[in-house]
Amino acid sequence: MEIKSDLIYIADDHIMVAQGISSLLQQLGYTNIRIFTNGQEIIKACNAKTPTWVFLDVYMPEGDGISTLQQLRSKGYNMPIVMLSMTADKKYVDTSMEYGANAYLHKSCDALEIDKAIKAIENNKKYISEAVNYINTSTIKVSINSEYYLKDALTKRELEILGKYCDGLTTEEIAQLLFLSSATVDTHKKNIMQKFGVSTLSKLVAVAIKNYFV
Image 1: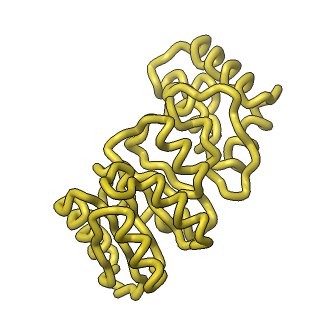
Image 2: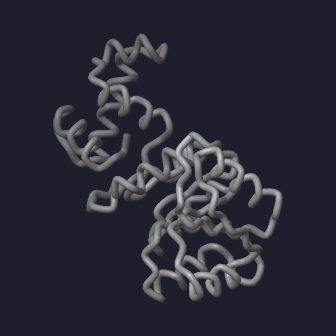
């Protein structure tokens, strides 16, 4: 395993959770990790030495994650910041992304998903945990360079069907795979296309892939 020298700060008022995240990062080769219990401690630490990565719990006393994120960005810190939470509430995900978070991870994540999030960020993408409810979050811009937004959120089923179309499957193949009728899949396709504002399946697939909806 490659040992990585990145300096990582983790802030969580539940020490066991912070230690758990630290352990997962260590599995990925990160060993230079410091743990804090609130946002104010993180800000003081950043003022002393800027880390490579910051992991922030959304809920914390003396500086919750979102206000800490906002303060760090307002001070000009541009290191990747990953939010940690047990909630998939849309308002917290939206606000985190609006204030400059690079990823939103559910605390049930494992080392594999943390690695996926880190790699996505390193490729100039944002990452939202697979455990977060896509019904609430599918309208979020998940590419830093993307300017594409949906007017209405996709449902979990719509997102699933969209992914199958992007994989090159036909309506009939998707219907068979998901145990649905072709008519039902076609109705979902029309609703998805309407939400994306496109008139052809090829355009839908192109826009979805380009803007990282799948």
